[in-house]
Image (tube, rainbow, N blue to C red; front, top):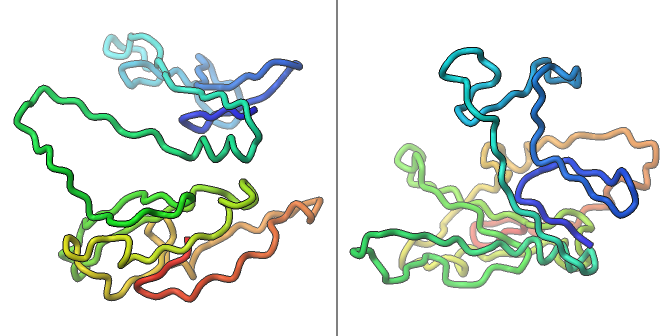
Length: 210
């Protein structure tokens, strides 16, 4: 049994057969749990201000919860398969010819998060390509394993050019991978620590491990 949310939420089971998820928390006074202020969010974007502009209804939070009655491994697999995006317009004069710079399928556990050419003119024409591994360590017996992506086979060089060189960075794109900082947690049970990491494939401009 798996519950898939569309945002990070706190959850608990206070009684057998019950599951409680906190979609949003609203308190009119400071509850002394660390925020040091009341959380009175409203539909007009104010947090408890007492003026005519801020006198509106409390914030309405909507979301979806998918209930998957299957093994945990297959439930996680189903959760990672993103829904398609649907777009609607009243404009009849729209381009209907499909266009994509991606010419090959990604591994089933890899997601092409974004590609952007922001500030390319100031960075020698470089673009940022973010490939995301969708599974955590030991989250799935097979899909949690590292995956290999060949960039020049993934993208159509006739449309976007060919990769000549690349620099491996963290998913956020603001740190080199070798400069990534990882917290070292003190565990009472060291057996809970992550197991040995898989040896990384040598990085070059055409092949990367995610």
